[in-house]
Length: 306
Image (cartoon, rainbow, N blue to C red; front, top):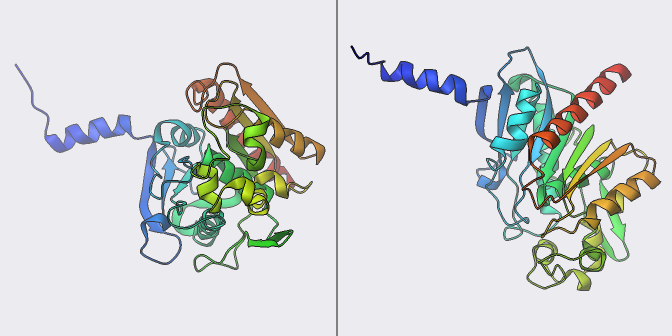
C-alpha cells in the first residue's frame, strides 16, 4: 500500500534538512535606495537564540559583479551558520558601476546598517567579524586595516575610505576580526612578486578596471586600494588562507599581508594550503572549520574585554 504525503508537508520535510538557517531576510537595501548593488541578505543559525554575533561575508568576483551575494552559500555561509554566527551577505558596486573606493564605501555602509538595525534582526554587534574570498577577501582585509580611517592621502591622491553611503553615518564600520581568503593585498606588485596566468598590470585586468586605469600608471590610487597601505597596530586580528598553486592571485600577496601585519604586531595567522588553487582545495572542511574556530576564539576574547 502506497502512502502519499501532502505536498506542503513534503516540502517542509525536505526544507528542514536542506536549509542551514532558522530565519532569513532577503534583499534589504542598506543604502536607502532601490539599487540592486545596495542589497544584502541576513541569515540566522538553526539554533534559535535571542541574538547572535555576526560575520559579514563578501563574495569574490574580481570586482566585476554587483549581484553575487548568494555565491558562498555552500562554503563560508554554511559553515559560519553552523558555528552559531548570524551571516550578512552584501552586494556592492562593481568596477563597471564605479571605480574604487565605491566598493569599500558600500561594504562599510553595510556594516553601519547592521549596527543600526541590530535589534530588528537579532544581531549582537558587540562582535562583528568579516570574511571574503579573492576580491571579497581584499575588501574584507581593507575593512579591517582601515577600520579607524576616514580619509587617506598618498602623494596627490586622497580617497574617502569611509564614504557617505546610506542613512547611518553616525554608526561605526569597525570590525573585530578578519578572515581573508586569497585576496589581493598590495596590487602594485602582483606581477613582480609572483607568477600567475593573469597579467595584472594589463590595462584590462580586474585590478586596473577596479582603479580606473592601468595599475602601474595609477600607483597612488592602486596603493590606496590595497589593504597593506593602512596597516597599523590597532588593526583587528587576521587569519589568512592562500593556496600555493593559486593561478589567479599570486601566493605572495598573502605573504606580504602577513609579513606587514607581523611587523606592526597585529595578531595574525597565515595558512599556506598545499596544492591549493583559487578556491578549489582551499574552501574545504579543514580550512572552513579553522575559520570558524578563529572567529569563535576572537569572539570569546572580545567578551572577556567587555
